[in-house]
Amino acid sequence: MISRIVKLCFSCPVHFGEGLLESSGQTFCADTLFSALCHEALLCEGESGLRAFVTDAQNGAFRISDAFPFIGTEYYLPKPVTTVQSNAESSDASAGKQFKKLRFLPVTALRSYLNGELSVEECAEYNRNMQALGQVFLQTNVRVPDDPEQDADPYYVGGFRFQPECGLWVLLCAEDEQTMKKCLALFQSLGYSGIGGKRSSGFGRFQAQPEETPAALAGLLKDGDADLYMSLSICLPMETEMETAAEGASYILIRRSGFVASETYAENAQKKNDLHMFAAGSCFKNRFSGDIFDVSVNGSHPVYRYGLPLLISL
Image (cartoon, rainbow, N blue to C red; front, top):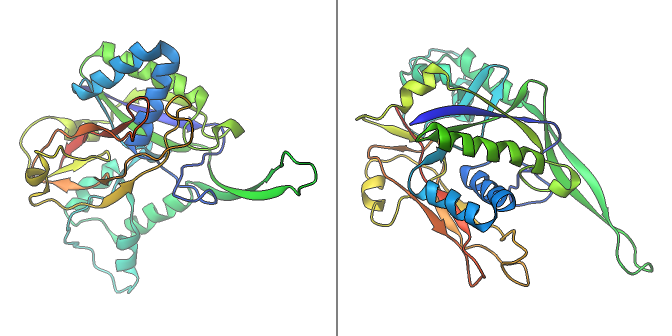
């Protein structure tokens, strides 16, 4: 497969839901991105375009990663969920806290981390970089009731604003240039619509900038046998794969839920079926295919949850 880095350069604040309207995350998962791209395919090409996009994903024509931070020209990956014996020496009792706090590290530092060669100073630097990625803020809005005799009701929306030269990136893999071109067109279109919550208030808009995959990352994408694989996307094996996938794996499980964002699905807002999925950064000894799951509940059409792994060799 061929691959591209897609940089998401946000021109406005973002709201990535973490369960509360008053809070916002800094990144988002591949299932959120896939749902947004599905909606964009429907808007651009109608139901036939949506079906073709989902079918391509199910057939393995393309894969997408979660969204991870970039700072300048440095791309960050999630810290692998695996045991690493550090060779770093420090008399500082807080050194262990720095490694524990580490969530993301540069692609160029991945091998050093896995070999236990990452220094305490480097770890602290990466943690500081994440703190400097942008700024969390709380915005006060007012809900005006239809009845003029009732008082206006204030509410709060959490958001995140990226610093200049900072943003998110996604790894996009495709089976050929034609599929890559189609996916990149949807990314470009999605940039005008925005991603995340509060889009009607102007949140979440970005410019999609495709770039060549860095050599350090492209080398990890090559097919072949490896002792350990890490997924760059939230994922879930098919039921028939679960036992093999979980064997010797180190992972974090996260619950994915939410409401269906479709006006034609049902008369009232309906929740999706919850799924517990492997977070990006989870490590596996055995490869698996994953699936795209229908999480609809008595609605008028399917609702898709992306669960395909994008595995790199460690």
